[in-house]
Image: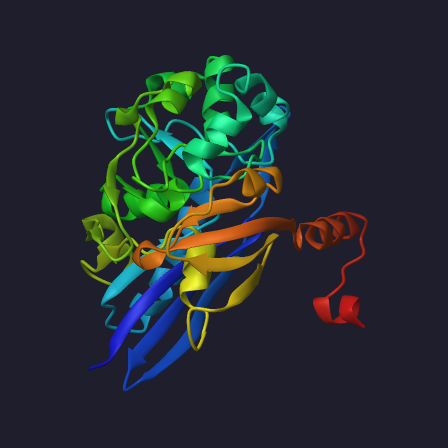
Length: 326
């Protein structure tokens, strides 16, 4: 029996809504809608326009609804670490801060005066990058963020978007694993790190694993898109986790290079590797599908090229990728 599944894949520079038809040992994919994603700079701070992203997702879903497609389920993945604040009434508290906002510059070094770097790595197995959620939360508390102060929950980006679709608040495992707040062995939030960041574990919604049902499209979304009450599932919410799950490897002995704004190079393992050597080399252990660990290194990816294209376009010079390659 054929299944029709819509995948929403959001990167730091673009997004796609894709229709996948699975059945008879075949997978056919069709891009329904593609759109740009840009950070917004407001008074020297950088944000993601989550409302614009939501509207683009609805446009993509409406393409399927307008054609009368029968959709069995929807899933969303995005980049890691960033999150939205939600108040007790369920309203979003402003725009989510973007990980390239300089408000976390120097924050890890300040944080390590409370919890040493080696201890943070030993607890989480996550590489130290100044924009990790741990340091973003610490920085928001330091600047006395009214959004964080009023928040009942923080929702990572894929969870925030599935919340807008369904009204259900969840915290998906693979995206949580990028935060540097979670113990990868127990899969529980670390109390010492939470206290040092100035937040409580209750700030995070109920935990779900890839493949768990989140909810169904809200009545308004069901009507607007023409899809009806389609189920929304938690996929591997971190885009790299979804990408690695799709690697067509013949066995477990493979390496990968997943290239986007960042390039991620690594291997898939049954358990995390947290040693003095992996700490010194700043390798990371992120959660994968079916309990796997993505042991990898972040490498500067297509960001440099995308920024060049953006600046060139401002100067009136536009180049296609084919022209750049030539």
